Structure formats: structure tokens, C-alpha cells
Length: 611
Ligand code: F6R
Image (cartoon, rainbow, N blue to C red; front, side):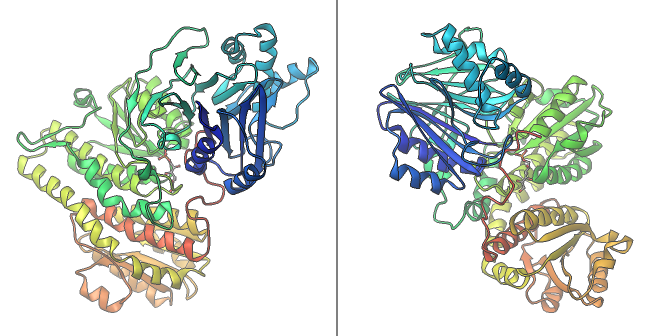
């Protein structure tokens, strides 16, 4: 949830840390802070609000030194104010933290009984006290003091720690919260996420749970809390720093919406061998999928919507029954899972706490697990790699809190998985497979065509920008697109929006319809079209303001609704991928017209690593 950056080298750390925080701001943004070490002195600066507040403070009072740690906070313990902002210091120890120390209350009670006093309401400050306490026992062994403190704490955390008495050392610890080590030349880095330090290095070591990384400017050692050396093989990322920038767009979200054609190309790349008509889903132990009799998909938010689309694809193509569950429900309902079950976890970040917990539960019931993730080597990916494997979406870094290109690539990856399962069961003739792949390979061009409508979509957004409610209706896979459109509108524009199956209209929501209610109907030929047209008539006759998403070849609807949002004609399985695109743009422009913070909507964070 929060963002951590650390740096140790010979350059001034302040600018590296501030730049890193800017790139991590999406992880949390109620306050930010930084600490550096210089001549055995710790310099701490903190500010509430956006990063600009910290940047202004640093102009007045710079942080000197070439080793430091920094943090953006999304409050989980204590109000978002300057005292609770990280870093937290006690004695020589300064610390930043992402996650939750679950036994913080008991630890605090013990420390209070020993006479300790606390400044903040955070669980983090307790860790600083514990380490400082052990430093008294091991005054020249900073890593040992950290290890001893770690033996006492339970929970999910990533920590970056400085010791005023060891200015040539920076320590990072990972336990169920993301933390990577960036390997530079004469300098090394810590970060919650790769983009934070991509402008300094592309070589990373991904830490595992229980790892403690001891960074010096010229070397890094990873050990566990018992001091045993751990080998972590560095990986090299081909993401350029520019990939993680806005690239000329007003917001990351708009940039990411426009990246979708390329993202789909990247997802498809190399995953099909033309010669022998074979699907190449690297990362999956496909043999383990041959005898699967039932599938459950677990996910949250937008990723859950990808799961709803996958249900239709897998059931129709591979004839395997599929259940889709919200991970937050699945994990608490004692689900019926058998060994012949495959449980698929879908998660852009790969760190979503509920999805991870749902998969851990499924594993305890001996199901096969598959992860569909975007972030490489994330917690969910690593869990599933101990089972049937992880398939990556390759959407590239998604910075905007609202998920867009991740969804598109999830749909494509799940389509490929459905084809593989169908092929394994002898249900897919070569010719049919070729047809499916043809339509997949055409999708980027169709997405490009759909994106050209952005100016018209902004006009539609202008008509809707003052609305208090919007109803979105569709049938079948278009109902899923309506659900996703409503989620995007809610989270970005703060307009109340509901996605509803159009066939359910008469069972309740029709009561909401009057001239004040804008209703957006998704009516695509070949997809229960006539039934949807009847719903459209019923809505219109009640005086509602009607908006339509239809095919560009649908001359009748275009004549009746000249401002209709248009999508190119494509295979029914790909319609939801195309239909969500104008809805993403609509939500984006509604938020932008209402002057809202598009990339960081209120109360939301990109990785929901706690419940
Ligand atoms: C909506 C959105 C969220 C995420 C959800 C799951 O735009 O971004 O609903 O889809 O929090 O996140 P991941 O996919 O990272 O597990």
C-alpha cells in the first residue's frame, strides 16, 4: 500500500529518493517523508499531503548524505498527519515500513512497561524501538540487532532501516509485502516496486519472504533472520524508465488506455507456434491441467470482471464448468474444492491480500493453482509457481490506480488459456483454432480504430458530467462490460453508477427510470441484440436520457442515437474487450471534466496488500 525507496552510494541520496517516491506515489499518498545519514547524523523531513509538500520542504531544508530511505504513506495505523508519517526514529535507528505489524499492541505494552515513550500512533515506531533496544546488546552488529527484533514481530511488512552508527549500511526486510533490491554501479537501491529506481538500474534482485538484504554501496548480501546467506539471482528488466512515465498524456490512465493495442500485441507475442498450431503458454505446467474437471476463478475488482469473461470463454470452448468468486468471499466461505479442481487467481499487482489468501486456502485443499499476474515475481505468482504455474499478462507497468490495460491483457491471456484447455480436450479443430487466433491478432487494429473516437466520447462525457447517477445495461458478456464501466465511473468520477443485466430490468431497476436517470445501453448485433432493443424501447418510453454503445455498422441505432459510442465489428468473444474501451474513456473524461485526480482517486490505492 505504502511506497518505499532506499539508496546507498556516493551521490546525494535526496534527489534519487524524491524521484523514486514520485514514481511510487500511486501506492499511497496521504503523507511522505525521507531520512538521510550524513556524518553520523540523521536528517528527517516529513510532510502531509501530496509529494509536492515534501519537495517544497526539502528546498528549504535539504537532506544531506549519500544514504537514505523514503516513504509515501497510505494510513493504516493512526491518522494521516506529520507525526504518523514515516520515517520513524528511535535512538540511532530510523525506519520506513509498508504493511501491518499484527502483534504491535502486545509489543507496545511490553515496551511501555520498560519505560519507552512513543511519539506516533503507528505500529512502525515500535519496530524502531525494538531494533534500537537490541543495538544496545549488539552495538557493532546492526544486522544482528535487526534480526533479533524481527524474531519478535508478526505480520506483513517491508522495511527499510538506517543505523546512524553504520552509515555504510542500508537494510531492507521483506515479509509478505513487496520489496526489491536495485543493483547499480557503486550504488544500490531498495524499492517497493521496480519503476521507483528504473532510471538508475534495470538489474534487480526480488526478495522473498523472510529475506533481509544488507546493502553497501558496492555489494549486497541477502540472509535470513538466522544469518544464513540466501542466493537470489538478479533479473534484468527491459522496461525503460520512459515506459513508466506519462509519455505526453495528461494522465497515466489516458496513456495506459492508449497503450492497449500494444499491450495486446505483447500478450500474444510468441504464444503461438504457427508450424504445429501449438499454444505456448510459458510458465504453466500444462500437463497438470489435462485432467482438471472443474475451475474456480478468484479475483477482486476489475480482475474479477476478467474472471466473469473467462467463465464464458472456458465453458464454451473447453466445456469445463467454471465458477467465479470474489476472493474476499471465497476465502471466508469454506468452499467445496476437490483435488480435480483448478483454481485460477487473477491479479494485476499479484499482491492483492484477498486473492492471495483465497489461493492459499485453495492450496490447502490440494487444488491445482494457476496465477494470471502482471507484476513479475509477485507474491501470488510465486505461490502459484509451486503448483501449476503463473502466466504473465505482459501489460507493462500500470501506474494509474484504475486498471485498464491490465484488464485487456487479462482477457487475452484467459482466452489463450481457454483455447489451450479446449485443445487438450480434443475440442478444437485446427481450423477453428486458426479462426480464434486470427480474430485475436486483429484485435489491436480494432482497438486502434475504437480509440479514434475519443473526442466524441469527451462530448458524451460533457452531457453526463453533472449527473448524480448512471445506469449501464447489457446482456451476457455485455453485462460484464456494463459492470466494469460502472466500476470505472464510480471510482474515478465519484458518480454513482450501476451495471445491470438488461434482462433483469423488469425485476427492480426499471423503478429507477425517469427523465432524470441517464441510462447507457450496450446493444451489439449478434449478442442478444433484439432483446436488448426491447429493453432500450422500454427505457426510452419512460423518458430516460438514453446513451448507446453499438457496432459502427449498426446504421439503424446510429440514426436513432447520433451520439452513439461505436465499436468495430468483431468476434463475440472479443466484444467485451472492445466494449470496455469507450467506457474507460467515458469514465476518464467524466473525472477529468469534474476536475478530479484521475490517477489517484480518493481512498484508493493500486495494490491492496491488506484487507
Ligand atoms: C479498478 C481496480 C481494482 C483492482 C483490484 C484488484 O480499476 O483497479 O478494482 O482491479 O483492486 O487488483 P489486482 O488486479 O492487482 O489484484
